[in-house]
View (spheres, one colour):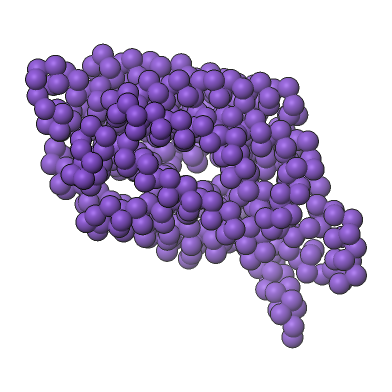
Length: 465
């Protein structure tokens, strides 16, 4: 039996396996747990930012620019994200499940490396590994291809909100394992690394491949060589196999995906609000101690209990906006909700920055920080959903992989401008710099999407060509 015939037999057998009535709920539970691992891996670097910078980078570069120098080294992580675009399209050929498991294992290993790092190179290696795996978001693709179309955004937002609440593990472990002693920061990473690895085992054992992938893959495998050659000559997107090149061709040939790419790139300027909020809090609460003549390193250590208290409420604010995004998006449409979420990013981040600088109650500051970050990810997710709802199944993973990299070219100001300015002016100005970068970019992106992109609400993912 040829390789293709064996693969056909494999997918036919898998597709014919019966699903019980509770399978969807069961799958959503597993995907939620996977999402928790993803959210923790994505956010732990920011939630622990000033602590790790003080422990690893300050002894080399000084306390006043430790975060700035750590951010400069994070450029290497951007290189890992760039490499990832060669990896994710493989799921359009080999299936979603293997990469769901591999991604989760990779994030766990990255945190494990950071937990044992005794110097900057090992820390950077761990951050590089995490940066390679977190952009792939296979659990997101699972959701898009599994849940009912008319409630797609609602299901997604519920799972994402629940996963965001799972981030409370980070401040909880900060409080229990570290407290004011920053030398114990490694234990936080270590415990969460083992959590991620355990979740990967659960995904490997209990998740099935998605039906849309299996159907499209079988359709391609059953084609004759002549039919495949004809499809290639006609450049039919509905019959093209996933790859980076085919994804690029599809994005730039279709007006909808092209403008989602460009507009989404400018909206990515808002990502800066997700990068430095813990440092903004730290300097805000440290200012009261600095005013008393206390040294910077000691003042930042004294601010840790306030920051940890604020971070307990951070996931609540973030989860709330990511939750309501789905309901609003399915009710009002993708584009109106995108406008609301983007406006919320700017407003809540301004209030957060002002409140941290004026020593507001930590719970309020934490809620506002979470609201700003949650609003941004809600806006970003709407762009992802609209792209997914504008792309055929056989190219979906490839397009979803390539899109952030291309959008990043338009959104590079979100990374480079703050990086340069913080290294010039020091860590203390990070909050104001973030606000001045995010606002104009999101305004440009919103305008482009509002004028150039059609609504995608209730699209049927199996009928897109």
